[in-house]
Amino acid sequence: MKYNTVQKEKLIEFLMNNKDKHTNVQEISAYLRSEGTPVGTATIYRQLDSLVDSGIVRKFVIDGKTSACYQYIENKQECREHFHLKCLCCGKLIHLECSQLAEISRHIAENHGFEIDHSQTVFYGRCSACRKSDEG
Amino acid sequence: MKYNTVQKEKLIEFLMNNKDKHTNVQEISAYLRSEGTPVGTATIYRQLDSLVDSGIVRKFVIDGKTSACYQYIENKQECREHFHLKCLCCGKLIHLECSQLAEISRHIAENHGFEIDHSQTVFYGRCSACRKSDEG
DNA sequence: TTGCGTGCAAAGGTTTTGCATGGCA
DNA sequence: TGCCATGCAAAACCTTTGCACGCAA
Image (tube, rainbow over all chains, first blue to last red; front, top):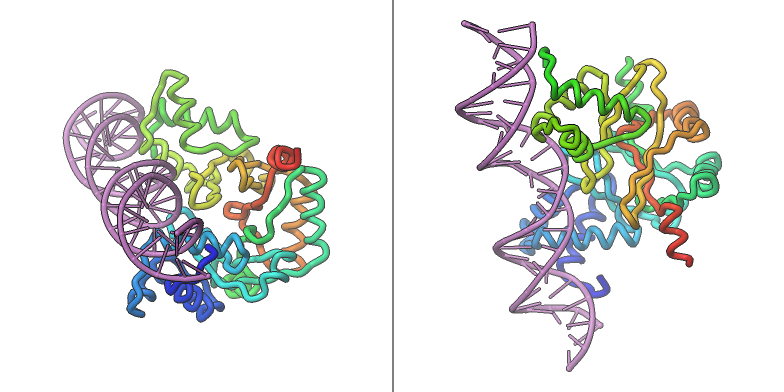
């Protein structure tokens, strides 16, 4: 996706205006239509794929039933190096910088021969806030 | 699913014989066919749903592309946690059980308050085979 | 006998793909 | 101008659902 197009611009605009939460293809499609610049579903998927590849956007698969979610990532450089945690309850995205976790990448690479791609890997689970509210 | 049927028996048999790894509906279907007792896809899904509900089987959702994975759980108490690694090159899904990785879950829970959901968490990257073929 | 499980086929939804068209640089 | 992105429609895929039939208890 080397070229700049109205479709791409509008799509990124929407994602940037919703940094704080994840969205999906349906919502994106609805927004673009409401803006007077409807974009084909295939194009949206293709653009999102490209944005995920370049690390600007994160893709989340919450479960098999729901459609995939996408969220804009502000600092793509920094985000290449740490892990991300996504809360399945509240949707919060946590950027986790931790030397002990950095060890994981090394361990898996050295002992299991697998090279982790941080731009596409996300830990799913429940954040501390949601755990507390569940218990009390 | 109160009744015992040949289909159910055979399905559980297969899952029990593959406790150490994950499997999916395709593999189950192929096995049952090879055993001379083909079972409809709908039935397999229905039985699996029921087994998951009762806690005998665990379901893993890898991503939108791959079909769901299932694994027999021997002992609900001491069920061994594991991680899934998926190769972005060849699509191979690796089932990884490693004490050092189990430490990660504990570390993240204790130090970062985040409880990882293993049924939805997948590490994406490149497997050893693909890394070798890329370099050589 | 009663009710539940099964099988088939069809439907459901999300995502991908092929191909012609139109736009970016 | 040449290549790339778009759009449409169709396809691919996994999974669910409806309904009639057959088997378990």
